[in-house]
Length: 290
Image 1 (cartoon, rainbow, N blue to C red):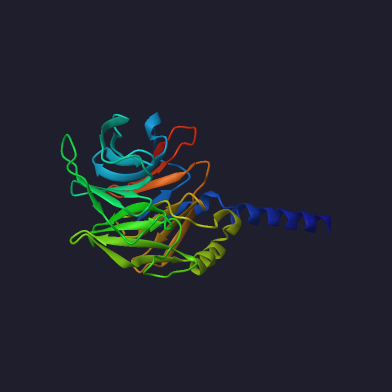
Image 2: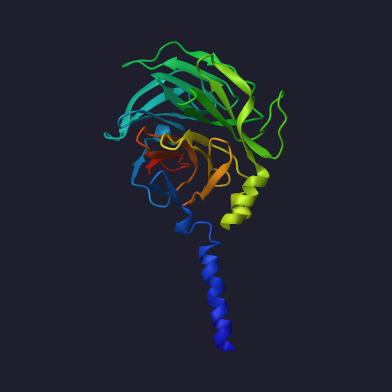
C-alpha cells in the first residue's frame, strides 16, 4: 500500500510539473514552417539605454536596425543592433501615450493609445512632415499594438481593452482592427476577434492556468512573413496568441515573466527572426531575439 501511495504521489507530481506547469519548457516551443521558436531561450539580448526604459513599440527597419518608441515622449528611435546603441532619434509629437510603431516602405506609423496614428516619411537623415490618421477607436479601446500585413498592405491595431467601438458592438473578446494603406481607410469591422470562449478552450486543451493567463490583454501585434500568421502578445495574461488567416487561434504560447518582464513590442525580420521588447520598470528596457 505504501509503495502504491508513493507511486501515485510521484505520478501526480510528474503531471503537475509537465502538463499543468505553465512555464515548462515544452509549452514554449513553437514549430512553424520548419522553424522552432523557444521562448524560454532567446538567441540574443540587448539592454537599452535609460531613455528607452519604457519601450512600448518595435518594428523592423532594415539590416541590424529596429525602429522603436517609448510610451511617454513623441520620439521616433532607430536602434542599431550591431553597435548596441541608438543611432537616430527624431521628435514627431508632443508628450503622450505612444504604444506602437511600424515602418513600411520608408514611412513610419506611430500608434497612440487613443487610436490616433501619426504618419511621416523617414529619410536618410531626418523625418518628413507629420500627418494624423483618424480611426473609430478611442481611449476606452486602449490601442496598444501596431503591426503590418504585407500581403494586404494594411496596418493592424490590437486593442487592450474594449473590443468594440461606437459603431461596432463586441463583447467578451479582444479585437484587432486594420487600416488599408492604399486609401488610408479604417475598416469598421475588426479583422480578427480573439473570442473569449475559444481562448478558454485552448487554455484547457494545453493545460494552462486560467488564473495565470486571464484576462488576456494585447500589448503588441506582428505578422510572421514566413507563415502569415498573426502574433498577438499580452503583458496582462503573459501570453502569445497565434492566429491563422481566418482569425482562428492556431496556438497559445505562455510568456515566462522571468524572461519577459513587461513585453510590449514585437516584430519580425523579413527572414523570420522574432524580436520582442520589454519595458524595464526600474530596470533597463531590453530587446530579445528568437
